Image (cartoon, rainbow, N blue to C red; front, side):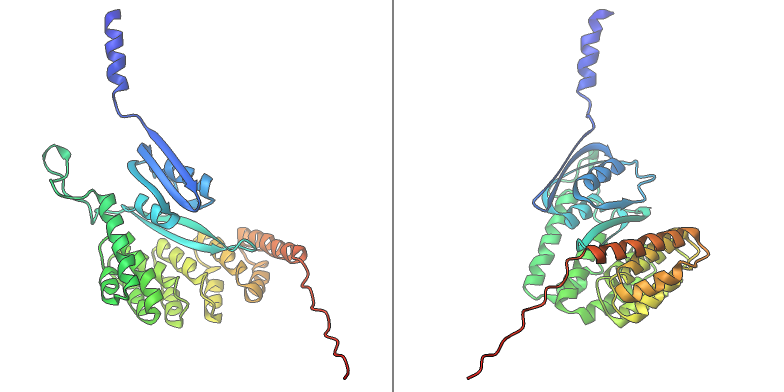
Length: 319
């Protein structure tokens, strides 16, 4: 019996082992994961990059993927290609912006760019694996944008792959923001939930009255994920109407959205401060508490800010 132990040990050591390496260097992300729970990968990325990750519960599915030296947004898009998610930036008080990742709808029902495997579980000859396909198409989109090829970007906003849609909307917003608003508004009203989420995310990048209107309509949606996307999108809008809608979100039936609205209002300076002062009398104890904390932090930041140095008076010499 003892003679069998070395053979059993060797067989066990040959099985695939869970392995994770995450590197964040010079603003670029590298991930090498083998059979690691998605939640663990996201937690490690968060610890190294400062990204805030919400809703990790239930993300226990094991993933295996490899990419090197990608910008943060592109790396997260690859990692979450088969999930419904939101990736946007939240204004901070003094340090500019910080990316925030929100998983809102769980795993996608189908993988739009997934290639059917042949016999034995391997892709048919001559095909690309999903990661390579998406990365190549994302690179092509940037090339189209550099060439001013708006037609290719318009076509890509309807691509079944969420990462392609998001990038196409972003690039089209730089090329033609008016058209991007129209297409994103249409996407936000699409019957497909993934299209709606992507459209709302795109609207958040476009400071436009039509975008604010569409985001405001989403605040009345029965889907809590849609309402959450809408609040995130309104965060970057600068019109007084956006502030009014965020104030309205303080009365949302979902406590997480009420708190998210409080955070969004804190970035709106005088307008937001007025609403936060009113929120000190909210019926929601969490809203009252967070509003008080944010107002105190805003006052502290103002007190610690260096005074503005006045230029010395100009002394004119007589003739």
